[in-house]
Image (cartoon, rainbow, N blue to C red; front, side, top):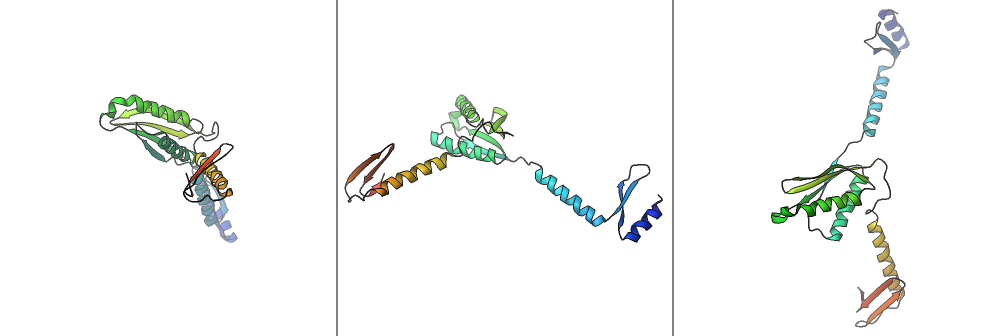
Amino acid sequence: MPTEEALNMARTKGLDLIEVSPTAVPPVCRIGDYGRLKYEQSKKDKEARKKQRNWELREVKLRPKIDVHDYEVKAKMAERLLLDGGKVKVTIMFRGREITYTAFGKRLLDRIAKDLENSAVVERDAKLEGKNMFLIMAPRATPLGPPRFVHLKTDTAHHEADTVTHAEDEHEPESGDAVEKTEGDDAVATIGGASA
C-alpha cells in the first residue's frame, strides 16, 4: 500500500506508522503505538542485561607459610565468592628469600584447587609473575558436590552452643574449685566459675 494511505489509516486510528524492516523491498511497516513499543523494547533490554552474567574477578591473598586455620578461612572466603558467581584469583605473595621456595607456593595453589574442585574449575594454572604466584578459578555451572568450607562456621557454632548448654545444666561450682564433667564426646572444664 502507498505510504500516504498507510499514514492516513494510522492517523484515523490515532496510532503511529512504525517501520519494522527498512531494508526489505518494499519496506515493512505496521500500525501501532510507538511509545508503547519503545517501552516494551526497553523492558526486554533490561531483562536481557539482568540475565547477562558479569564476571567479577576477586582476589584472595595467601602467604607460603600459612597456618591451617588461616588457610581454611581464606579457602572459605574464596568458596563463598565462587558460589556468588564471581571468578577468584588466588595469589601467593613471596617476601625476601621465600621466592627461592616457589614449590611451596605451587603446592598450596594445587591444594586450594583440589579443595574447591566441587564448586570451581581452574581457568588459568599456577603462574609465577615477579614475587607473586597466582591461579585463577571460575565457578562451575553445575557443582560436583556440596561446598567444602562454607558450612564450617555453622558446625563449630553449633558445637559451642551444645558445650555451653551442657555447662549450664550443672550447678555452678564455688569459685576456686576446679570441676571436670564428661558426657559422651563433650568435655567442659570449669575453673573458678569460667569455662575453658
